[in-house]
Length: 32
Image 1: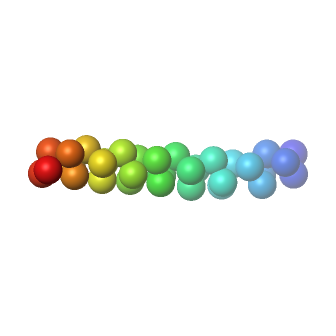
Image 2: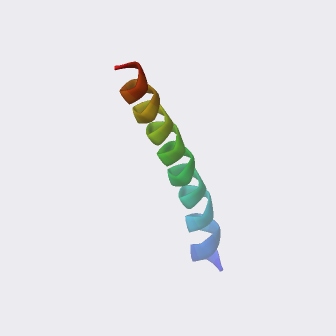
């Protein structure tokens, strides 16, 4: 259980930053 509680927040952060990076790349590609 401790492994899950330690991995869940990290996974959420990774997913969040993935969305931010992807959206940034797409907007940059559209503008460029």
